[in-house]
Length: 285
Image (cartoon, rainbow, N blue to C red):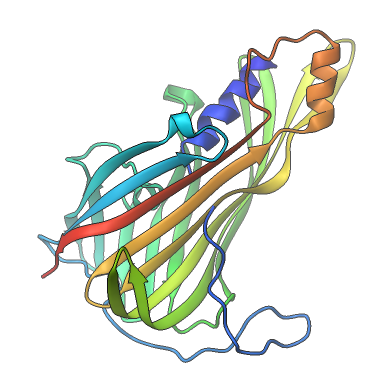
């Protein structure tokens, strides 16, 4: 069982939930949290050969500042296949920015109103233990949608065995359109005609162990373990993304393990990480 806790601590800490949604004075209908907004058009993610974006990345451990780190990401258009493009980061290396890790995971298609991706979100554990959540035609933004309108949702179950312990992972990966903004300021720079959207991963995990009879324990109760707010400027692309990742292990499961004398080895029962990526320089054709 100890390996399960290590598995999720390592996995989720590699991702990052985001700042609260922008305020709006638009009224909402009872029972509906969507808010009307004016549709806009633009080149919110320019995709063409030679385009590059450089980001300053900060990773903040909200529970232990000693683990904070800073780094950079160099994102660029890598290839084209018809209307679809692939991106790479850091000379085909690993992305430091959470949003960048999604952008390089597959093919992107951009129109004047939408950014669509077919790729995957990966929990990297090495080799066959990696958990992959694939998505097809996921909308990263849709400027025609109202504020808080769900623009993509993918729900599924993954069954996986780690060190002879069966895991059942139930997930929902979804995206939500936020505001279309006339102006948006980040790092002292004001951008015009900006759209914003949110990506969430809701995750619940159970483990089946056998002492006398098979017993199912909740390791992580269903909760939002990853949330990303991203802002895209017309004629530039992604200018800022803030991602928060976090989890809390099931308290009853932890208590049972402690009562049974299981040494958790200092593994945390909760985590909270904020990852930000701020555009520094860019070349867009």
